[in-house]
Length: 137
Image (cartoon, rainbow, N blue to C red; front, side):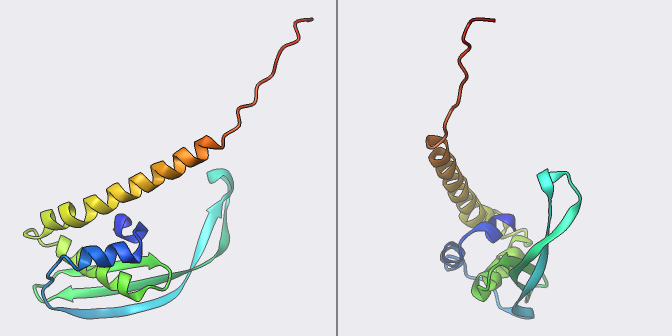
């Protein structure tokens, strides 16, 4: 689910189009709301309220009984719906390998590549400071 949540709506829609999901019912239709985000100074300090972010959630139930749910940042209801259906399909033993091979693995590889690109771009702007010792102690 973390891979789907981090993926772009276009990437999730593209991968969803390759599936032929069985009929499903909306348990909770895609809806958008606010969630309070908490933070910590330095990762170890006392928690504090940082602010609110927009989140869209959705819950579906396949006709075979599996229930899938999804939460994603932003207001894209279609991404939440697609992610919930993919989650429900992943729970089926006959579809799990296909979901992992055709959707999760390529999305995770793309995200890792993007993260590496950002890391390389950031590294290129790094300035290394050094101190020269004068020698007269």
